[in-house]
Image 1 (cartoon, rainbow, N blue to C red):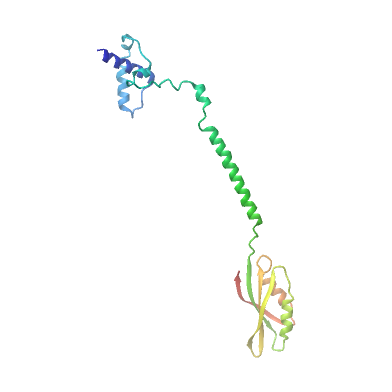
Image 2 (cartoon, rainbow, N blue to C red):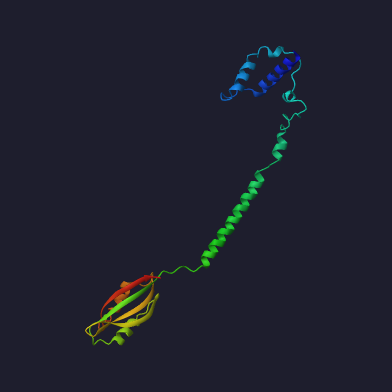
Amino acid sequence: YQLLLQHLEADVAVFEAVGAPPPAELFHALRWYNHIKSYEKQKASLPGVKKALGKYGPADVEDTTGAGGDSKDDDDIDLFGSDEEEESEEAKRLREERLAQYESKKAKKPALVAKSSILLDVKPWDDETDMAKLEECVRSIQADGLVWGSSKLVPVGYGIKKLQIQCVVEDDKVGTDMLEEKITAFEDYVQSMDVAAFNKI
């Protein structure tokens, strides 16, 4: 009988500590809660003195149910906050350093200049055109981003030869339209200009 009373006292102590019905999915706990609640009128008449909740646990096991009650001590121990702040500041500092290094490296790195290699066919009026003078006129064209290369005379028929000349241009500065305009401006020697080959470098 005494053992039964002890069990009932323990049930009442836990019932009061729980305070509210468990959720429906914990059906065993809910059934126990409703069962103990049905004895609510009789619990005041139970003999003996109700013990602390932790005293109803297994024998020889230390009662720790009240160990976490000192909120002041809990507030003094910050297990995560300060470390996270330090890590956050450290991560921020490292990120800023790496961004600065990247920007510095990018600024020092020379910008890639888009260039093209162009082979031009420059045709004279006839076989009596002075081809040496024609080439001299073509090479006299100077512009930022334009470099003249090798050249040769190529027969086109009836004793006429065309000037085939190589040049390298920076795409943003020199275009084929500009070259054609300047070359055909030597109208005493040049009949026309064509692009024989165009390759990006």
